[in-house]
Image 1: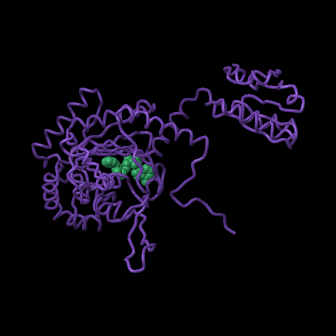
Image 2: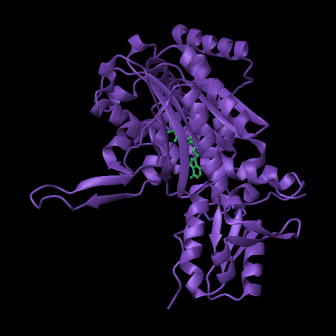
Image 3: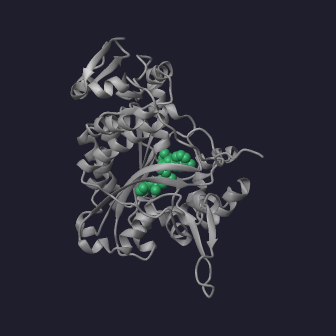
Length: 436
Ligand code: HAM
């Protein structure tokens, strides 16, 4: 029988690597809390039309990469519902904002999320079919200040702080403005006109997009099309005065806060809902998939899925890519290997009749906050020592004598010292720093 494996583009995350994932998530939670963000959890799958209407029919994500199926679990009289595993989380958050009438609070909603997303992309380093995002959205009625350029600058400053606290150095913030909906419509017309003579020399997808959604021509990855794309008009030349002023206020606030950025007039992002500020943080160590995170403003998204006016801005970071970046950094620093996650003690019961007392001792120590590995009374002493040395800093021997007398035999593997310790003193003995 053939052995089953994780599906292409998905993977198992095992300890000790998962400790790094947790560290990143914990840092994100701590940093976001300081900016007054609260957590939102939305379903893993949604009605397909949510993504078609927000991310956009012509985007690569919606046209090629979604895991979609017809759900037949409803009453026979009803039509099957088309459902999709979420390829991103912004659409779900805005749907929830509308569904729960969060706009009626009159407050800016600052929401963050951590969870898996699904895209049928060609897997490679840093690109998976199930990947994890940590993201956040600040959305609300205009009266709550949701359109203010200060929001954009605050989010970007928060990201810079997060990456710095995580210890990721050498990132670049790429920044652009794609203008208001009206500016984008104007740019689309300009592009459409510019593409009339050029599209016939381009790939089939671009020939179609040149008519349906010219902006998406800029996402084309076909190498032969790139020199043509280079000659196309830039979005910055189509911006109206309001968009120019908004962007100038964002960059001024970033300069004042000391967050470095790099203007990239080609950064239009691969999702249709963006307006005005767009950005990506890239990192050289990641290779081809160099975007650590991406985001931007989406002032018309709520209306496009049937909601009230609710401008917003947000981002999502690839957790898989943050992990790769930190792993590369840790591999570079060839100092002492990390201590790993060794238990404080390994309790070795000397015989099956001591298993239950050993469990009791382990329970006491664990409740006191120690990390305890529990052996099995069917092991010989030598085997217990070998197992303990691999997983713990100490071994605690629990034989009949120890149980009766309450004096335990403890060996500290770092110093090699073996001592007799009264049971009541065990916690303070284990809490001592490791011998050098
Ligand atoms: P996105 O640029 O499609 O934006 O994805 C954000 C980040 O998710 C990327 O920069 C990358 O780090 C990670 N990512 C995307 N696809 C993959 C993949 N196949 N494998 C591994 N990592 C991946 C969004 O998703 C928007 N919802 C961001 C946003 C939030 N905009 C406004 N609010």
